[in-house]
Amino acid sequence: MKRAAACILILLLQAASGRPDAYPRQPDVDVTHYEIRIELNDGSDSISGTTRIRVRIRGERAAGMWLDLSGMQVDRMGIGGKTIPFTHRGGRLSFRFDREYARGETVEVEVGYHGNARNTGLRIAENRHGRRVYFSDNWPDLARRWFPSIDHPSDKAAVDFVITAPAKYTVVANGRLVRTERLPGGRERTRWTESAAIPTYSMAFGAAEFSVTSGIEALGVPVSWYVFPEDAAAAERKFGRTEGMLRYFCERIGPYPFEKLAHVESLTRMAAMENANTIFYSESLFYPDPVSEDPVPHEIAHQWFGNSVTPADWDHLWLSEGFATYFDALFCARTDGAFNLKEVMAGYAERVFAYPAARSRPVVDPGLADLTKKLNPLNYEKGAWILHMLRGLAGDGAFFEGIRRYYGRHGGGNVRTEDFREAMESATGRDLGAFFRQWLHQPGWPEYRLEWKWDERSRALSVDVRQMQKTGLFDMPLDLVIRFGNREEIRRIRIGDKDVRLRLPAPLRPSSVEIDPEGWVLKSVSVAPQ
Image 1 (cartoon, rainbow, N blue to C red):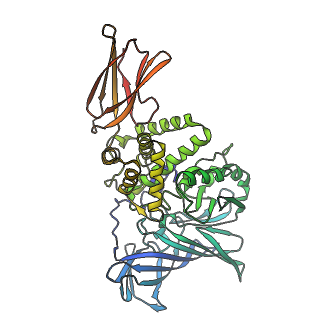
Image 2 (cartoon, rainbow, N blue to C red; image 1 turned 135 degrees about the horizontal axis):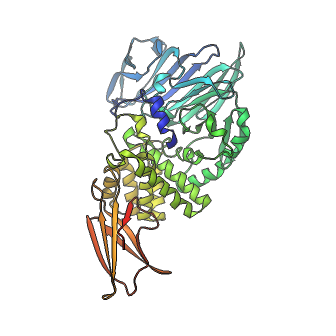
């Protein structure tokens, strides 16, 4: 999901989720599969749907459960063809099973419902070319507005979409296209199936009069794009480097986790949304001239981080957004030169510094109630900086080995920050507890004041570094670079105290003294006048 959309989201979705991640868990049950059947009609913004939900029992025994469903009218519920009673109030659909089920058993529940879906978790509207379109738009917890679910990233599931719509529409969704069949009355039924477990916010379908580009393959992965016909030429430019992006991320992270990759022009509220293997891009991205490929690498990186390795709760969102932000920057550095990465990271730092809450709130922030407000520079840019600093500490070999171990252990599952720390400690052989505590659970960043003096008489250099921030001390190694004209000396120093004072031999007066000039640490530096 693109950072630039955060302000728009806060305005548009502020009523969607105004609570911290205190989502009540149901430890005895696990949804493993949804089959979502939806009927779309051009003459109405209402939908009728049937969702079949396969549930595996994880506790010793379970006699019932509840699902999230808001704004829809439930018509019926059943198990094995038999009707069961239910209660539907306050966005919660509660029911008892037809019997008590034991650990390891599965039960399939069917829910029939209908309701007006416009501007809920579905967007039913006209695109900028005046044509009617249908797009899901689930993030953060709007899936519940159009199909019954456990609408939280901690409960991932496979999904099938069976969409019935007027035949003029092409339907695209997560996973593999199984079949499209003609129906009476000029309608079609399309089935897509996604076998990997994905979070509900990433379950997506779109129906529109698309121009489809297919027949492209990268590392055995079919690549396609679905765009409004008027924007086909812009799409060719926007998505032209998809193969290179896939190759780079597979090399750095691990195998691509899904059966296909589709880019889809849509009406998403965000600049883009990383739905699993079916990425939605706002139609506004297709008419600037020239068209930029931004945010394509960011959204492709999300296929590994967010869709496959999914934060177990919203407080660890940086494991999705920070990773996608950094790997976007790494791809650009690969193609545009190493200096560009330093430039990009400097821009990320400026966004963190400009964010008013950055000095008072940490990255992992259970106290932040509104989920949309978690789309902030702490989870995006500061999250990317945390990865960059780890890379600087560990070196490329150990850092990317840690990334591959993390993905290899947790692909297809849920994670918290501790899982990433353990993978990095395993790869580096270091205790990284202090690093993770200060950068993820402590607000702010080091604000260094550097003062140096050269004593001609003793031929010695005095260097004083003071941490000026009021958010707590940081303990970080940095390079101290002393330049004497065209020559330079680099010393590795550790700054962990309020004041660090060094006295170094210097036969000549330095032309400059800097700390971390290569930009491996998120920091601000002021230099005392000479």
